[in-house]
Length: 341
Ligand code: UT7
Image (tube, rainbow, N blue to C red; front, side, top):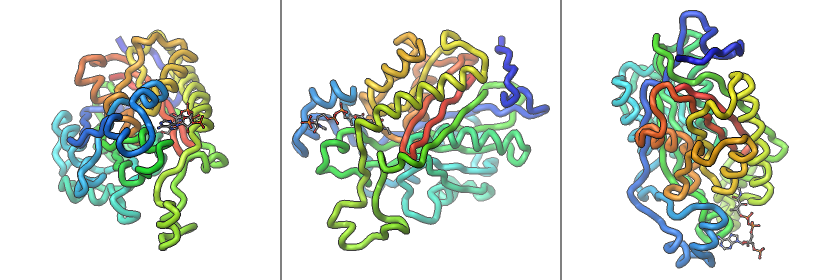
């Protein structure tokens, strides 16, 4: 039986509209880069990476495989599950910090690749928090009766902005994509409530210095390796735990449910120690936490989308289960969402 949601923002209160997730899919590139491979590239060790992060390997896109290609594969899988054709899609939202190019939007390139000629399309940039931002945006368009079918994708080719000479960051990231189809449906299984937050004052904890209007590409920006991401690991780590815990607590409060009601907690897959610390602070049991970062590393906006797809495919999450998604990323940005699968 569906739980009761008194929160005024819960979707049950939008008369005559229900936003459901009718399809989900993900894609990761074939090439695997292991910690042992990294040992040959920078001064690091499998032991350091596993104990400090939990990551054992990550997927790396081919040279001629771009964010829009991975997005298209994930999207097609989600469309297949939903039984939706490209022509039915009204809106495409792509969350990414690694678009194919600064413009046009990767969402437009994706629209062309999947043949969704009738869809509006735009990118959103909320770094690792992008998928929850995208879910909330997609849901709002459905609830407002603007659209009936929305494709939300989180897709990243982080290998393209990773400095492969910097051991502080290059061991952390990977490539991939995850997608969902949101639709107005009678039967309710989808996003119940989401919270989102940001703190631009701490934007310099995790950023890419050059390539924008502040610091356009030049010989000197290339020589100074300013087209790669940079991160203050320790500060980011502390902020991640605090923000993820607060966002999750708030979304549970708004839904008026206790953590024990959640079948599966799917946190952003950045660091095993962050996931465990957040789980512990929320009072979640270890078996409630879904973790797949040992296989993929941190795939930013794709992270929780890929994890949710795997949780569903493996039977960890079945119809009617409550799922808690929690994200955190550059911006800083963060968010949490409760989904009734
Ligand atoms: O997706 C957005 C959110 N991202 C995150 O949430 C990531 C947050 N940060 C982290 O996950 C962690 O801070 C890291 C995994 C990046 C680093 O872990 P840490 O426990 O904070 O290590 P540290 O930065 O304090 O570094 C400890 C030592 C340093 O050596 P010294 O200065 O103590 O001699 C580093 O130079 O480990 C060294 N180190 C490495 N050693 C071997 C840093 N990277 C490596 C490496 N291999 N790859």
